[in-house]
Image (cartoon, rainbow, N blue to C red):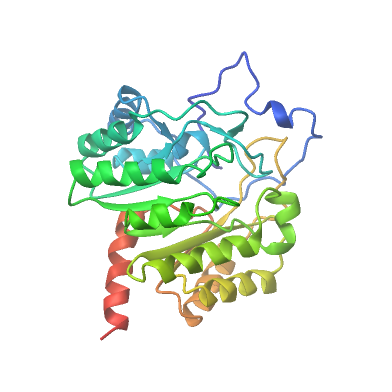
Length: 318
C-alpha cells in the first residue's frame, strides 16, 4: 500500500474547501504492486529542515507524492514556487485552490540557497498555476533560474511549468532563461480534460511544448500523463503521437492515485506489465527517454534521467 504522510494540513481548516460539497468518489483497493516506505530516515529529516529553514514549498509535500521518502532521503526535493495555493481546481490534484498571496521577491534567492545547501547536481522547479498574474509567473520562473545559475553554476535545472494559458509572451520569458529541461505535463488524454483538467486546453499544451523547441532547440522537452483515470489504450498512444509531433524528448507515465475521496476516483490500477508495454511502444515512436511504471512521477529520479537523456541525444546524433 502507498503511504502518504501529510505534514502540512491544518486540521482546523479543510485543505480543499472548493471540493467539500462534491460527492465522495470511491476508488478500488490498492494492489500489492504499489508499495513505498514511510519517510523516517535522517536524510529525509535533513531535507525537511532545509526546506523549512528557507521558508519554501515543495510539490513533494503539497501533492502528497508517494516517493517523498525515497527522494528526500537522497536530498532530492522538487521546489514549488509562487506559493502553495493554485488558481485552478483540477480534479486529480492535492494542491489547495484559492486566491494566492503576492509573490515573494526573496523566493528565487531562497530557492538558490536551498539548492546550494542540499548540494544538488540537478534540481526540479515547479509552481502552482497563477492565472491571477499578467505573465502567469513567467518572470518569477526566470528569476529563480538565474538565481540558481548564480549560486550553483554547475547545477542543471529542470522546470515543470503551468500552461501559461492566455499569457502572451510568457513562454518566451521562461525559455530565454535557458533551463536545461522544460517540462509541462499533459496529465491525461484529451477525452478526460473536461472532467480531470477543466481549466486547461489539450492542444494549447501540445503547442506550448512545440514552441519551446522552436525558440531553443537545445532545451530538452518533457511531458507526462497519469493512467487509471478512464482513458483507453489507443488514446494513450495518440498522446504519444501528438507529443512526438511536437518533438518532445521525454515521456513519463505513472499511475493516478486519489488524494482524498473528494478527488477523481481511480477507475483502474494499471498493472506493471502494461506500463512496460507503454514504454516499449513509446520508444518505437522516437522518444529519447521514457519512464513508465506505477510510481513514476515527473521529478522522480530526475537527475539520473537527465544524464541518460543527454547520453541518448548524443547517441542519436552520431
